[in-house]
Image 1 (cartoon, rainbow, N blue to C red):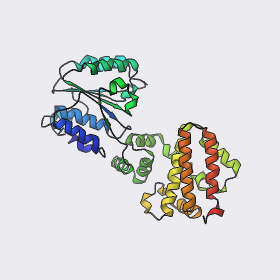
Image 2: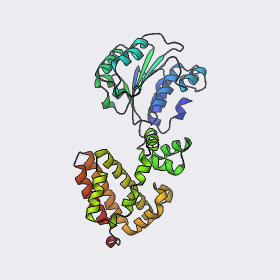
Image 3: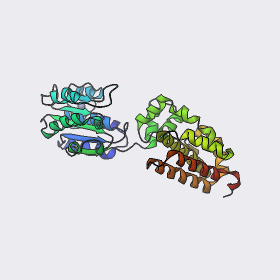
Image 4: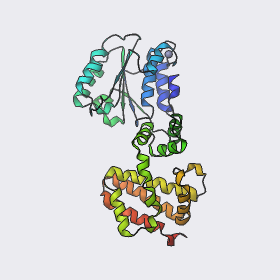
Length: 334
Ligand SMILES: [Zn+2]
């Protein structure tokens, strides 16, 4: 069963199965959610179900389903961003959708067109596609995949049934990464950073983002020894742009959350940065629960401020000075 491969998306999966089971599949779906959370697998399972030789829900083992699993079925049309391009353009929609959608399916009863990154269709491409949705061919189905509903034209989304896929729980991402052959400690760290997306985790892994971040441990462990000048230098380095700053804040939140977990005596397997457990324990003892709570709150405030477009440098300056004050040894009994 192809749907069984999809993890933690019970809501959208049950809606899809019900529609397939009742033979009431809408002409067009819009699957929204972060990349790497199961949207594409659900799209393939839906397409396979429409042509499965043994039932209404893709069995996963008939010859048709096997072709869908491999992405090779002649009635499966995958439309995505061409290598090196930043938009899906009208020529692509004409060639890959309009030229084929009104033809009879090649081997099954239904053709399915899956548009990955549908939010990257430019205006002309979107309008051309819209024409097809306005007069849909009887034997064709369309599944658009996008990050969120607002990222495609309202005229398109209003003709689709939207199914929202959620970011995957951290543990599920970790399990998937371990199955992919990544070591547990690394998988755990990647999963913590990945915001519910297996794809994000794999990008972090391949770009060496973890090693980059590892270089940031040292300042965090000794913030209490930093003078004001050093702190402002650090803030300048961390705040070169909004994106970098948000990455650092995520990292700080993990770091101090780990300390809080240890301070409260929770099981150590909940700690993200296990490789640094001794430093974290020392920090937790020195800083104490009340100060850790204040630090976590100020990191969260800084994140909100930066997301709301305040001055990055100023926000980090204030944050680091505040965090240092909460980590000074004199406040340890607080
Ligand atoms: Zn089948």
